[in-house]
Length: 349
Image 1 (cartoon, rainbow, N blue to C red):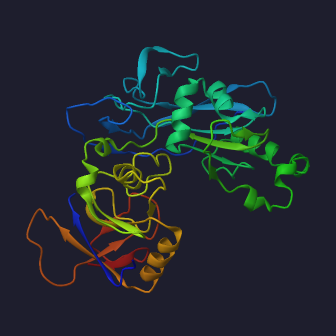
Image 2 (cartoon, one colour; image 1 turned 60 degrees about the vertical axis):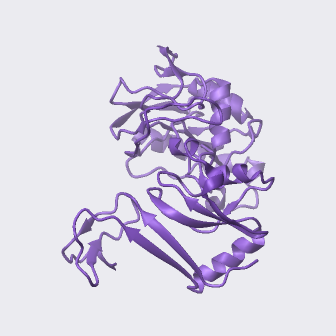
Image 3 (cartoon, rainbow, N blue to C red; image 1 turned 90 degrees about the horizontal axis):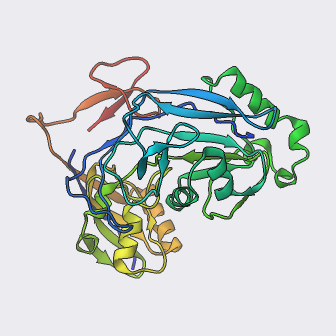
């Protein structure tokens, strides 16, 4: 069953281990006091700090080094931790689930594989993480790979630049059969690791989100009660606030699509057709087939889909067009001002 012009009402409620670490974000989620800790049901309070620095230690290979990101807040511990520490100075992990009540500092590890083998085994050894924890990260979609290491950012250290040049030298890449027929840019594209026994070869790049962004709100919701309509082609869901429609780069497990699929007992995962912000609640359309996903995307392109928002304001809002200016950089947080500046884009609401 196809939709004509869809009206979607949303309610806004408020190497070779070389770790080329360059960014971290500040994230927070507020959760209830009651914590239900099972694999299928858990709550947590997650807060990410943004004060980190990089350190590195020698590894077996002369050309590759191991870097680690350390939090400036030593009191903030990682998911499912004990009071002991591993050899790399981090707390020892148990499992990614159930969600812990403690805060988690940001930690994203960038690795270049020094020795081929199963990805779970390699990450566990390289980062000194329990295999079960690494398996959970892979299940969450928090591990990504590329055949060739992407170019480091301007903030990279001279040593990191040296490592990058060593593993991407033409003489080195020429010996790798896996990248034959691919351009350099194509080989640098990242993809998600989906299998714990997936083989990674020497020279491949891995990005491990050790502390994925969590959505404990998912475990509080009666998802069946949020289903508005079910057809052979799509499902309409009343999305709760503080949840992600289709997941994030480091967490595709705790998402509306995943939990709605389970609530309906579907064997084929629901697919996202559009997004609304995590803090927003309201109607979203989830496709049951690839064909309908294409149909709905076509309706969006043809401007047949209309989103209506109801905003909760702290003070009375004047009628008419409200104009503000936003810096035209696609990096969060977006900077907004009332004045018109040459470097800003005009937005109206």
